[in-house]
Image (cartoon, rainbow, N blue to C red; front, side):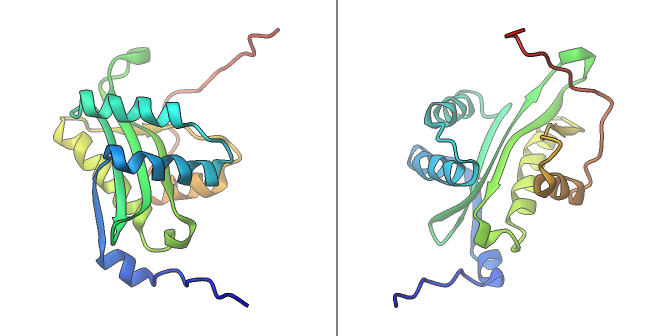
Length: 160
């Protein structure tokens, strides 16, 4: 029976992780990781976010985490200003970490890195929006100190 390669030990991941801007070569890995986790391939979406981060790096942030050249996670966010009267703040749109690396603080390191970028740009608040039933990601963001904010999201089906 073939043996599967064991996941790297968490301490190995922590010691050998680098976090930096996404590159064009990373996009195929980002797309595959996201498709594997969400069940939906969105290459055009990820390419659009990559192009935005390339065009306006101070306000559009797309970071990846790598362990020994293997992409193990990513985070995407941007600074938005004055929507609904809100002062400029950082928004996190996506964060994904390889399941075998989730207990190695990779998500926390990505979160800290994007928050540092926001801080460097003068932003003092970070926000995100998640589905109510996404307990894993809700727990993650709460573990980072996030809590319910002052806004309520509303929506309407346009097929009505």
